[in-house]
Length: 387
Image (cartoon, one colour):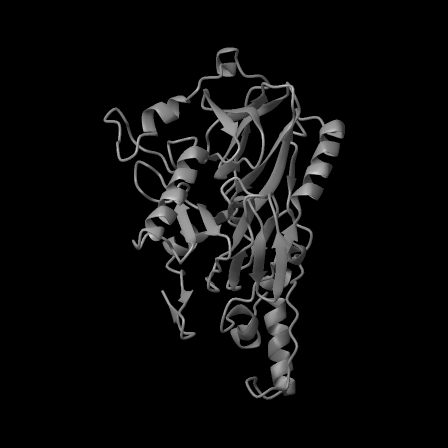
């Protein structure tokens, strides 16, 4: 069928403009543009400033969500929204104001508060999206991944790679809330998503509450890889990174710094990255996760890179500055750092508002995607960019 017989109307609309970098506006140019429109063609010379800017111009904007407000709404949702099929997870997503109402924290990252009532089960399913859970408060919910019951407690980071069956159940008389992070927007943009419903109920055996999950018994030993491990799948085989280990690692860095050793990211700033114990790579193929601790009074230098991040304050208080926005934040608050926007922190934490006496921040980002594609430029102190 010829293009003139194509019944689909072209959405292309072009306007000849008088500008130094554009061709001379003539009737012949107008005729050429009408021909482009009919054939659904767009010349680069009319779009290059938008498609290829000199640096990233993110649509996502810096934004802050207060934990106290989110938790109140989650409690209301617990009373009104069933967690079974349809409700599925009772997850309430952060919608960045710059992204047109889509349920995306950034163009690549999803962040949501999930809320499970006493005795409830979140039914089993699986999906191609890589996911994790991070617990800001409470305990008593168990996630069951591939039949392995894994406890969820404050400060725990629980990754769950693509296409693993998983369900949750609350074994206590108290509700519990946590945050979910996924690469939903990235996979949605790539038309790469698959989703599969599993069982409505898990078995009695999966309701067991072991002190350690099977994954922790096999993979949770520093520097030791089990010889029984078979072919590896993408993502960490360790299903829980416990807060006591993260806390000790951060405290040890600061102790070494106090003894005069070079052990911290910046003065007064300890930081660790969650990694796959089998490979040493990021814990998930599309998501990087880190924990940062700033002692009272510590300040970080502004940093910027392509790719976006979501932060949650785990403990303490401080001031965060993203581009032209500054906020005083406290436990549970979440905020977004869009691509190529400078971010810096100042700790105001103390013993009255922090278990550690410091400003603790959980961060997740899309950095593995940018590094895999060799798009991980960074800004140097002299203002130049490097890869």
